[in-house]
Image 1 (cartoon, rainbow, N blue to C red):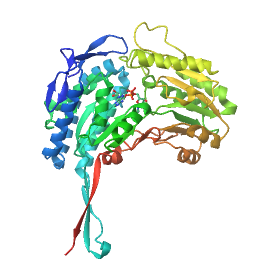
Image 2 (cartoon, rainbow, N blue to C red):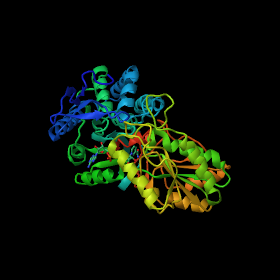
Image 3 (tube, rainbow, N blue to C red):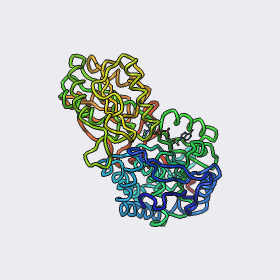
Image 4 (tube, helix red, strand yellow):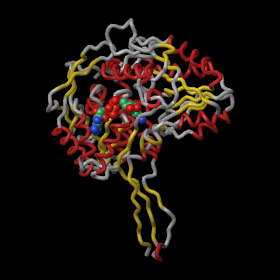
Amino acid sequence: MGLPADGTSELLIDGKLVPGSAGTFPTVNPATEEVLGVAADADAADMGGAIEAARRAFDDTSWSTDHAFRVRCIRQLRDALREHIEELRELTIAEVGAPLMLTAGAQLEGPVDDLAFSADTAENFAWNHDLADAAPQGIPTRRTVAREAVGVVGAITPWNFPHQINFAKLGPALAAGNTVVLKPAPDTPWCAAAVGRIALEHTDIPPGVLNIVTSSDHGVGALLAQDPRVDMVSFTGSTATGRAVMIDGAATIKKVFLELGGKSAFLVLDDADLGMAASISAFTAAMHAGQGCAITTRLVVPRARYDEAVEAAAATMGGIRAGDPTHKRTVCGPVISARQRDRIQGYLDLALDEGGRFACGGGRPADREAGFFIEPTVIAGLTNESRVAREEIFGPVLVVLAHDGDDDAVRIANDSPYGLSGTVYSGSDDRAQTVARRLRTGTVNVNGGVWYSADAPFGGYKQSGVGREMGVAGFEEYLETKLIATAIN
Ligand code: NAD
């Protein structure tokens, strides 16, 4: 159930594992550049079949109304994934380049366990509730608010935390009574295909309820946003692609839920332990080679202590070697592909052109012959107006900026098209809280608090997204609201 024994993964369509009509495409280990094997390559007709199956399963079965059955299926899925966790771990490290230590948390085990939250939420949810009896327009009326599944959900996901993002969509979407077509990123098809096989072989999820369509062609994913048979698209990825999905969805006025990019700020106020805060910021920016949408990639420190902060960040980041993700101490593995590595290198070159300097790192590590590695890098000497400080780099790259007090720190943090996350460090929780409340972002860490958990809503302001994933808010994204008004005779 981990790496496919025959080196090939299939599509899951209408309860069957099938090959892709466009053949296959390779999946590559980003730490070694070895081709692991191939994945089924779907074409438009395959996607059409998956959408049709999901539509039928929604319209013609009791999936959307049998809450107890769905809860049981999701618990079966969680249990089966747990039984295969070691194979999934091997696959995740090989295909994603995820450091082993992260698979105990957000790269694998955390999201698998979090499926329990979706099942529990559905089990305890108030699917119907009555408003007070009233007499609108003089007619005595009993009014019931009914919550119902949206319908067919198209889920489109990226490669950086494939299980986390796939399960943060599949869990609530299925628990809420929707049927789903999942289109994972072309870089990580096996992570999703393995889930499809496990769901088919170890759960009672009926045919058509869960479909998984891997494809090398982004256009196949775009069909989910365009097709009138799909009621909702749940997308995680870059802001540019999110915009395209929103435009495609507009033709049928689809519900469009978006989790997009970020360029979050780590604010250190002048009463904080600067050395410790800068070091934590640097460590975080190097994790999983910086491939996290909510990673704080702008360290914003008091101007008077700028050099000290750069030194502390560089001491930490310079001590982290980009290395083999199978090793238990590796924090920073490879980036996903040669394309991403070259894109990050482009930003490093740009940093110098914009007048910045490297306090550590700045390129590809000399000691790695194969694999898509970038050295953890601290960039100093730039302002928040530089492109390197404004655009999402998605690599192990931290930009250190100077602020002139709390108001200026808030101004810099908010001077971004994004608004996904943020961090505030201060010697005073009250002062940090005051700053946190002024940040235009969906999550804020104050003095080391952890915002990531199954019951906590996650999402972005501004161009970082629309809607919330996880928590009860993330469950309710997948529901419609119906008001039933019955005349009282
Ligand atoms: P991407 O936008 O290139 O691709 C994401 C997915 O969209 C892939 O499955 C891709 O095949 C598909 N896709 C591409 N073009 C499409 C189109 N026109 N219509 C429909 N689908 C299309 O993103 P990526 O490079 O895979 O992932 C990195 C990005 O994801 C970063 O910007 C990162 O910040 C973001 N991200 C956001 C979150 C969040 O929760 N906010 C989480 C993880 C990653």
